Amino acid sequence: MKTIPFLRCLNMKEAIHFYTHVLDFELKYSNASADDWVVDLINGEAELGLTVLEGDQKLGINVFVRVDEVDELFKKYVSRGLIVPNNPDSPVHNGPIDQSWGNREFYVNDPSGNTLRFGQVIDQ
Image 1: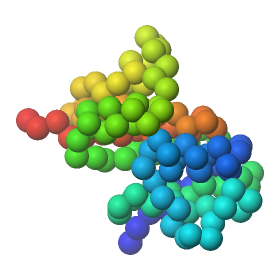
Image 2 (image 1 turned 135 degrees about the horizontal axis):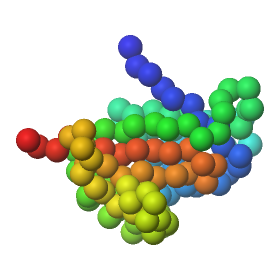
Image 3 (image 1 turned 45 degrees about the vertical axis):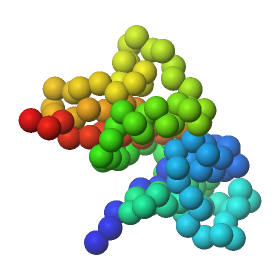
C-alpha cells in the first residue's frame, strides 16, 4: 500500500517549476504539462500529485516528508532558489531546528500555500 497526497495549486506552471527546480521532484510522466489539471511528481520513493481542480483538495495542506540528511537538503534547496522568509514567529521555516518530539525539521511553503515539512529523526 502507498499513500500519495494531492496538493491543490493555483498555478500549475508555477507549481511544476517550484517542485521540479527547487525541491528535486520530477514529472512522473514525460508527456505531463502545465496545461494538465492533475500532474504526478516523483522523487525516489516519494510521490505527490498536483491539482488545479477545486473539488480535489483545499489549499493549505501539510505533508510530512521523512529524509535522512535534513541540514544538507535545506542547504541544497536554498542554493536552488528556496526563499527563506526570516520569520521569527516560525523559526522552522527559516532553517532546520530540533523539535521536542525527536525530529530535526524545516518547513517549506509552496507558491500556493501548501507546506512540506521535511524531517529527520534525531539520533538519541
